[in-house]
Length: 54
Length: 410
Image (cartoon, rainbow over all chains, first blue to last red):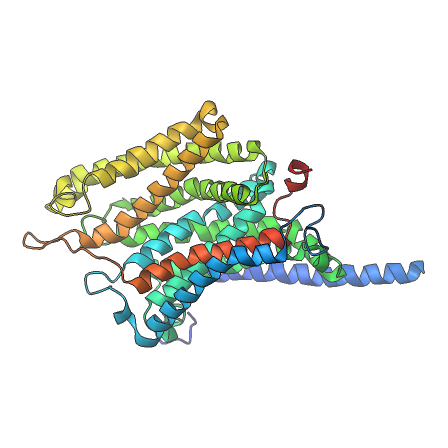
């Protein structure tokens, strides 16, 4: 799975397979992280908005 | 009764009625847990698997539930990527159904590996030339995608929505759901296909072996195609079953009819491709290995030619022809009878590709290897149904699964 695992070899098949797996995990991870950060910002902005209003 | 924990404007049964309804499912779960304990505690000698049947009932169940759970990825594709708005009325239910199917498939695989403590080997020491490695990676990542898709549905519970952060999180996740859905489609294409690729590349098993395109045997494409065709029909059928049990209408007929129309055409094209594949296999591939078509369908107690006719004609062409006609779709009974036939056809396909492959004799002096599962295998295979009942019941009770429910039940 990783270059430091003993059966790892540097060739195209390995790049394609692990690249595709890594890409899928990265897309989901990045999407989730984006949503969490944006939700924190939205919540903080909403709180600030409501305290300004009062 | 209504409480603030239930979705807004809908009625649900009392708590005691709900517990009573769940009791039989929990009983099955308890027996299955005991069987799992025996298998993990004492090993695979608790099953009827043997040297001839390294793949058995669990693998069939895996292949079947993964294909039926394919409704989640194909409905997501239709709703978020193709922009078919009507499918959004059933997408939450499809995601939950997919989540149950995939999590149960992984649990059954956890039993089947026999050495669960070494389950991580397939990831860490990945043999990237193995179809099964591709299945393991795609299945696991896709289960993660389904969990991510399920989170905003949970967050829509009225009590959770009162917490502002969760309110924003569910909104933001819905906004980029197309990204998650696209990832799910990408992963599903490969794992559904690779599950078909596993029998297709078995050179030593002429019943299953197929030629194909580059490294992919035709079964790779047929499995993906059939899952995309029948998955939405399974989602629609389970939704209809939920309607019958709850005594409520949850989804408009036009949603069912749209899914049936799309699935009908998918099923028709699939079954034509499957027929062509079967004809080529029977006339070219199998004879080149020294077998005739009837070598695989005679002199045994179970696998007569009827199973091929049942799969392709009765559970293939027949439901496809019903579903592509408007009259067939408008008659609700006929629609769901066709859906049931298609689901049975898909299960037969997975059964023969796993079990008949192993049963058919390879040498002239071989007998048919017949197999009957042990109780531990049967109970754990029924377990997904019990888990499905529990998860769907809880989700239906507390989460707004069906946007049209309030309108249909004033």
